[in-house]
Amino acid sequence: MQCVYCGEDIHFEPGAGYVHRNGMAMMARCPHCGWKGPVKWYERYCPSCKWLSLRDDHIATPNADRG
Ligand SMILES: [Zn+2]
Ligand SMILES: [Zn+2]
Image 1 (tube, rainbow, N blue to C red):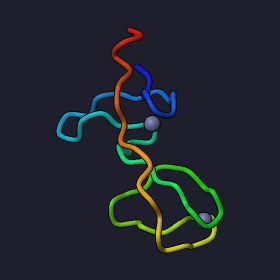
Image 2: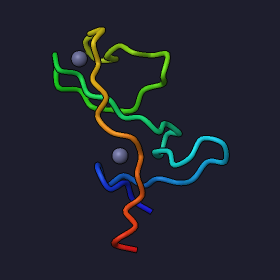
Image 3: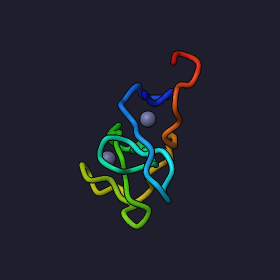
Image 4: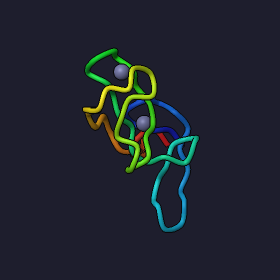
């Protein structure tokens, strides 16, 4: 199963829903340096430049159409 947004492999976690390879459902992006990646809900800063205003990018969503 692949994420419809980023194409990364995702899988279903009981209780959490679909998550990316590293276990994170939410992916974020940094408007400051362009970093993109998974974040925990309590880690709302960019691991690359420490920018504190990460934007939500997308939530893991299975690409159902392509089987
Ligand atoms: Zn994704
Ligand atoms: Zn950044």
